[in-house]
Structure formats: C-alpha cells, structure tokens
Length: 345
Figure (cartoon, rainbow, N blue to C red):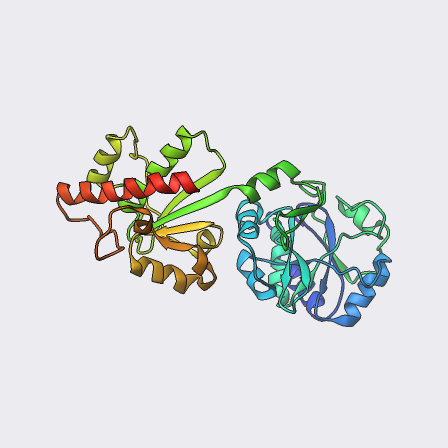
C-alpha cells in the first residue's frame, strides 16, 4: 500500500477487524505495530500471549488526533501540552494520568494509514510493536511478518518506516519530566521543549495591545540573554490575518522594533493549554479564555495587574479608533507592566 495514498477499502476492512476484536499489523513512522481494540479483554490477552509479554505490562494507546487525548487522560500538565504541540503527530509517547486514576502511555503517530485505521475503527486502539518481546522492533513489513505470519488477522505492507526507530517515551506525570526511553527524539530536544516557559498575550484583534506586549517582552528578554522563554500573542476575535496598526508600528519603531511582518492570529485551546502564563488586556478576554479552557484558571492574569499605574479599572482599554495620545498612554501602561514581568519571569 502507498503510505501517502492508501486505498480506503482496505483501511476500512482493517478498521472493522480491529473493532471486532482482531489483530492487524499496521505501519507507523517509527516501527510496524499490531493494532488492537483496547476495550476487548480477550483481544488484549491474545495480544499479550502472541508477543509473549507479561499481562501486567500495559500497552500504549494510539490516537488519530491531538483532541482525542482528552478522552483518555486527565490533569494533563502544561509541559505535556508543550511536547504535544512540538512533536505530535510524531515519535513521542507520553505517560499521562488516566481517567481511572492510574497512568497510561499515549501517542499520535505521524502515519496516514495508522491514523485512518484508528479513526475508522471507532474504538480505543493499542498498537505495540509487531514483534515478540525482546526481539528488535520491525522497521519493514518483512521483519514484522517474520514471526507473526498466521498469528494476526490482517496485515498492511507500506514499505520501510520513515524513522526506523521506536518512539521516545516520556513520563509527564512527574516534574521534572522523566525520559523513560530515548528513541527517535533526543533527550536534549525533549527537555528543551518541556522546560521552556511560554508567555501568551491576548487582546481582541491581535493588532495592537498584545503585539506591543509581545514585542517589548521579547526585546527585554533578548537584552537579558534569556532564550528559555517563548513569547506569543493572539486575539480572541481574530477574523482574518491583519498586520499591526499604523500607531502600533510607530510606537514600537521608537523602541527599535520592526513589526511590519506581524500577522494577527486567533487564540485557540492548544496555545492556551501550552502557556505557562497568560496575560489578558481586559476582563472579558480573561473570561473568554477561561470559557475555552477552565483548567487554565491559575495561569490567566490581567496584564495591568503588573503595572504601577492604579486607577478604577484593571482593563487596558482598546486604542483602536482612538487618537495618538490614547495610543501613547496605552503603550506606556503596557511597557511598565512588561518591565516588571521581565524581572519576575
């Protein structure tokens, strides 16, 4: 089967076999695996016996989309979302808290065939490597079928795998994260992503206030030679890709910052979940963020809380449509808050 253009009729046949309790050899980008229905106890027992693997050694789940992780895991830490954002789909297995209070391994493979079989099966799918325990994990179909011919119900040959190496396994239920197996992704790459702080600024359209805040903080951190912080900005009502306003460009230009290439982006659940600190301009931004991701409550603040300027409101009001004096006042408040943020982050 062509891994880039797989025939849907065979994928549906494979998915149906998985759903009804059969075992199917499928390719992923790392190694070949055996897909099986995670909810079928007899299937899991058959799979354990086939692989000669202890029954108390659980299999990792494979999913077809990032969103699916919420079905199976709970209390997912920010570090795990950072790793998902960077390496999924891809060769990373994360150990997370399961819905039943235990732990589980979970991965989103970067393989169209694997994703479609999982999605079309309509069930939770485990997919351990297609080998007898203790043998090398198979990186092509011939290796996968060598010891399993006649022991599985269906098998898909899509040629050699892309990476030819097993996934890296990371325990994200502890902090610092613990690397249980260094596979296709190196230890340094994993730790750099997990340990890097992410700061997100949010306004309405992502064309003025959040742009000012992001650029000022990036400049301050660069001056401090701080390269362990990722700074992002987004808008809650972003309806298109717009540049920064003329007034914003001029104010930042006075600080030696060029934002001609800025294009507005909308905030989404993924960026909220991976951010360590989220700084909103107004109360209604804060409320909208918490509606989207309630568990971010302890990470969302109003930016003006960090400014020395005190008045009757903690909102930094939208300067769109206002005069240059109002823009300058807005900029000054944001700049003062950023100075304090850069000191404490």
